[in-house]
Image (cartoon, rainbow over the protein chains, first blue to last red):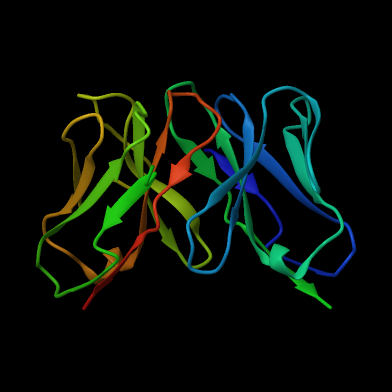
Length: 110
Length: 113
């Protein structure tokens, strides 16, 4: 079967750093993506890793280790507006859609 | 550009009724997708269309049909709605199959009584 595992909830305070992990088990692998979803809204794209290593985009970074079937999203200088759900997703074949994890709810407090 | 649009935003059906959810994108994207999202379940793929004229089943296709009307439009039909189909439905598109970023519509919130 195919599965993605990520923590269901994470809490942090403003200004802190938080890491959301994702481990995957899929029949193929074409890349790991991260999406953010605010309550009731549409998911929006954050990052994509096809190769091992760290990708940085502003306050957000994403890491991938294909040999470990593992990746993480790193959020720095947390702000209240970062409170949302974060999903990792894997494209397991070229030409097919993404398989999503169940999501991690991040709560940022002051 | 409007991006990905979905209609309706909300819908209430009775068990056994049928309806079609509409999705359109104005980004000239090749691939389009339908997902459903239930509490604690993440996003699950119902059907997708890798290109105009093709459709394929995803993880949870039972009870649904789709039509890729043209490059812009991809509709999802419930022939006989059931309470288990109560969910939020998202349409998404991507420039090319295997591309990096999916663009999502605002969702349709469907309740089946």
